[in-house]
Structures are given as C-alpha cells and as structure tokens.
Amino acid sequence: MRIIETKNAPAAIGPYSQAIVSGGLVYTSGQIPLDPATGVIEVEGIEGQTHQAVRNLAAVLEAAGSGLGKVVKTTCFLRDMNDFSKFNDIYAQYFPGRPARSCVEVSGLPKGALVEIEAVAAID
Image (cartoon, rainbow, N blue to C red; front, top):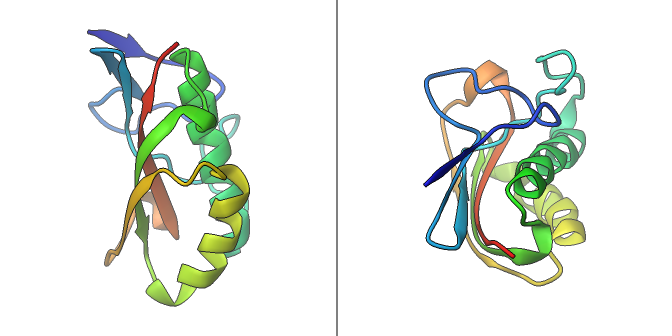
C-alpha cells in the first residue's frame, strides 16, 4: 500500500490521504473544487466547480501514476440534483471512456462545495 500526496491538488482537510495505491489500483479521496494554491473555492456555479474538482482529481491520479483515461469507477456527490444535467455536460468532457459511476445528491459538502468526485483507477 502506498500513500499519494501531491501539491498539485488541495491538501487533505482532515485525517485522510489524497489517495491510496493498492493492488494495481488507485483509490482517491473525494475532490472538491478547492484551488490548490489557496485552499479555498475560487469559482462559483456547478460548471466552474466541476471543472476544478476534475482538475484536482486528475492531479491526484497523475501523482499515483494513473490518469483520467484509466478511471474505472467514479462516485459523484452533488449538493443539488437540479445541477445534474450541467454536471453531466462538464463530466463528459473529461471522461469520454465512460467509466462506471454513481451520482447522488447530498445535503452538504465540505467548504460549501457544490460537487465532490472520487475515483478508482488503474495504475500503469
């Protein structure tokens, strides 16, 4: 088991790792749309927040020796399911391979985020 940590994604805001590599897979913690440099959400709206969350996810995957194209499963959390269509439009730009996915509405996310995305991906 290997712990993944990169400065190209936001630091963990609790007692957890950005990701763990085990058995040829990387398991990421959920990524919210924090700016890695400031540690705060700099963008408003589901579109901008989705872009930032996916960029953060991509940085963690890269640090683990993987990438968005190797994702086999995502779990997505939306604060408002009314954002589902807009979220899907952005999500599809980053995941053309169409990994398996769960997407649920939650009553709240850390730092007031509108979206959080976690993934399981293959390692080279």
